[in-house]
Length: 99
Image 1 (cartoon, rainbow, N blue to C red):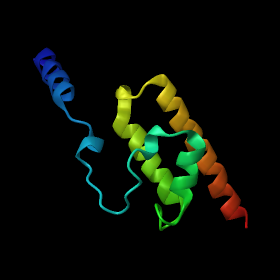
Image 2 (tube, one colour; image 1 turned 90 degrees about the vertical axis):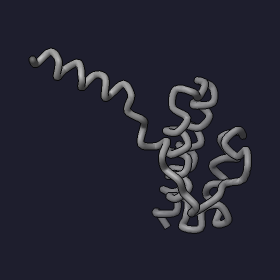
Image 3 (tube, one colour; image 1 turned 135 degrees about the vertical axis):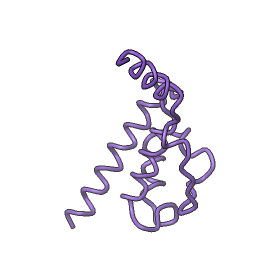
Image 4 (cartoon, rainbow, N blue to C red; image 1 turned 120 degrees about the horizontal axis):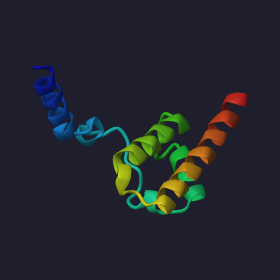
């Protein structure tokens, strides 16, 4: 019997959807096509009050969400550029906290 239980568990996890696919948000709207640009532009835009009214930390959450949502569909180059944007945005957040 334990083998059947294990088989059912495998089947459930294989068909289980990712949580990030069901998230719907209306809090902020980054400009169309922002995440296809270079890292410096992404970081600068996400740190702005226009895109992230609650500050750059909100922009960091948007960027992390976008990377998680992209999953395996992101190319190595695009993921690398987005990770670079995260580093730049993180530096901006650290500078703001240091003030």
